[in-house]
Image (cartoon, rainbow, N blue to C red; front, side, top):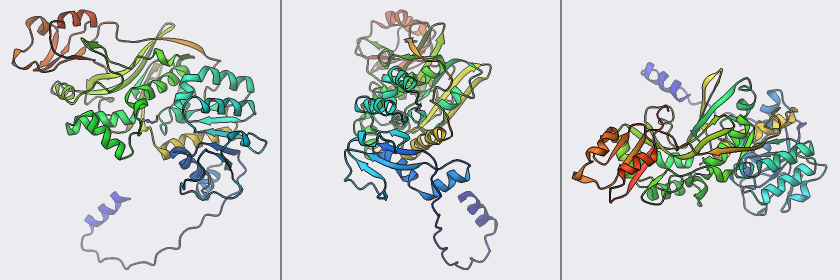
Length: 449
Ligand code: HSE
């Protein structure tokens, strides 16, 4: 619309200004009959409020009906805090309770779990399934940590459990992986699964600022949580990798097996993006690289190799060019080749898109997110940093001393405080680096990003 308006203005600069028109009457949408499933919402935080707003919106319901589906009806809300004004006009016939058990009765068909965490939320999902409700959740922590248990409970209860919103929120990824890619053997999964860390790393690089400074700003603007641990330590991205792996390869990986730190040389390794410094980014940039928190997993026989760590990759590659809060995922599969998707991976509106689609899917008779896949067992994961590969090596404060000839032999490209190595295993390379008496940071290079 904006684009069209500008085109018109510049094409006809001498046209007289149009007569002002009377403001149109506000359009009223008559509420359609809601013949779809009766929904109870557990948890009225940011995402819960966005979901409730749409469920209560007659225009949204009318759109659903116009697209050939039955509009769901919000019949109950459970939250410990029912006093805060969230800007919702909740009709009197929508029950509001602080104890979710009160909503597990015959008046409810579907529970949307948005409590968060894996404790109370897990019990609520188990209780809902046992009470004969299908469940929709956006809770990646819960699904990744207790997926096997929840899957068994849903199958035993004969109820459906859907969790599209748990992975990349508004980017529809689980449905296509299970359905439209079902004729394929998935070889690898990788991408940028966390918007908060990608925003922080992108801003550190573009504005030459330090981590703490950018994090504080991201929190002030509401991009980052007040408690950012799950995002910045790589947990959130690891949860998504576990869920994608279950659907691609038929097993639940133990979340504790997912490596979340790049290797350390002569120091402590830091989880997630906690060890990434502005100075590292500047060395990377001089070598044509950017640093990104990359989630990846690759099937090899019965084993999956993968991790969630910062990696160095070309800035003009698909992963490298994914900036800000955008999420990106790609699958390499046979016979299709490489397939990728990108979009908004966080926030109320984007997450509500996937949650409501799951509710509509259940209303149309769809089953669980795992579709026709057989029950999952465990899946072994080993990290992927063991073999020969390229490394970005950053040696801070090297100054004029420069690199020795032995180290230079390792380098494919170098700058004053760092180099990109030839393919080498970490132990062989660090043996040659061992003589430095200053901090050394190494990042795995993602060569085919
Ligand atoms: N906090 C996450 C992110 C969104 O920043 O991507 C929810 O997984």
